[in-house]
Image 1 (cartoon, rainbow, N blue to C red):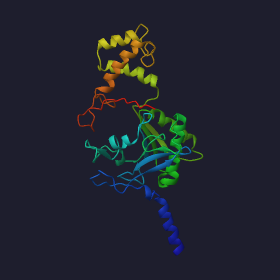
Image 2: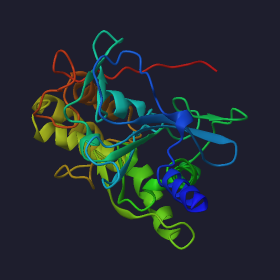
Image 3: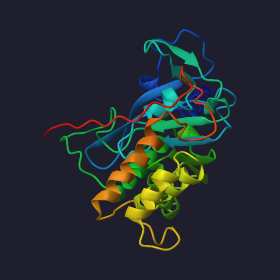
Image 4: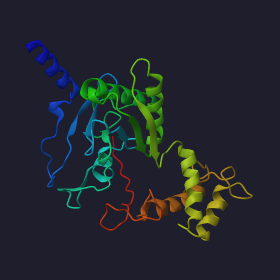
Length: 297
């Protein structure tokens, strides 16, 4: 009888194997009660690289709800932005010190894993401070981190439906990781059910060329600037993706007028996710203007 009780106890422990050391017991600035568990720690990626994660269990039904991986883009943007300014259960208040509840939080219906990748982004690090990487190594590191999550950190979620999501440079991160998951099913089965990309970047050239057309056709700038763009960046005839080069022009005047258009697109507080909507998490209802900084090495 004792042996049976011991076996049952071990099975119960194994069925909920969340790492106790990673559980967040107290979060500074959180002044409201939460109905879910959340964890923060490290997942092992490519050898010597350790990727920081933050995992928020579902507030609805964590045992049966899907697991959703979220990755911000960049490349080089921290997924803590997604957690604390977009889809996480708590958002940073304007005072920068306290948190408020996010009524749009994804963890109301899913277990959400926020992953900072590649190494050297956010709190992720490399043992030898080697921050050099590329898309292939990043996707491999993300895949290994995912294996570590399901095998060692949270094996109880191994059979849950799984989705890979991201934005911006997630247009690269998400599909390259999905391919590795699909190709690795025989060695390490993961219940991948789909992926989603918001405002994804899959090509710098296509993005930079198409956004000029988009901005003009949506009235972000007028005919005067558009005429100069066509004059200095297009080869004649009707302006099309084939006759215009806004992304990599060799003509100096083209670069100058493209910069003027870009300033309007990125620096006037427009909602980059929904042009016709306000930004719900900002005090002025505007998206912060893009700021460029340079660091001397």
